[in-house]
Image 1 (cartoon, rainbow, N blue to C red):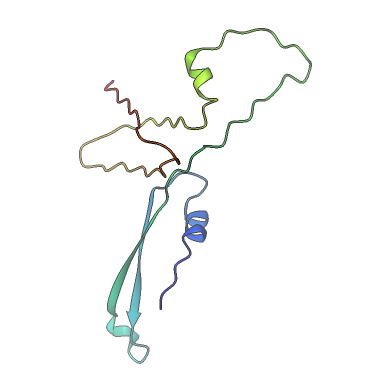
Image 2: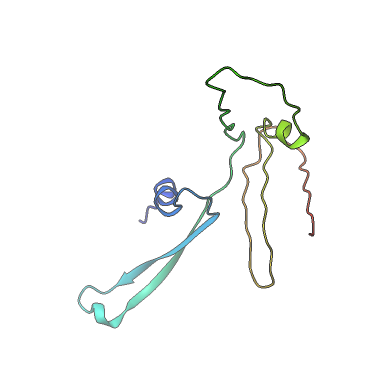
Length: 117
């Protein structure tokens, strides 16, 4: 029996940044002859999905009470949406970019915008 703790692996290997996939192997080695190398390899893959609702960003208030009215742009208003995920990637030939999402309860569709700049 082999047990893998995915939460511990994600916490130890992610370095506080999003890593979508962790890969490794369980190696079977003959304890009488370890120099012979592994007898078998069992691949282990852990997917690290993004879970919704996302944690909202903390808004720092003005400690001196000088709250000047400002106009919010469309992007600033959208950051309050706990189901809005934004990501900027530079995609190049031969590089794979993966992101896994846990589908929110009750969701039936998703909107994806891709820009080529």
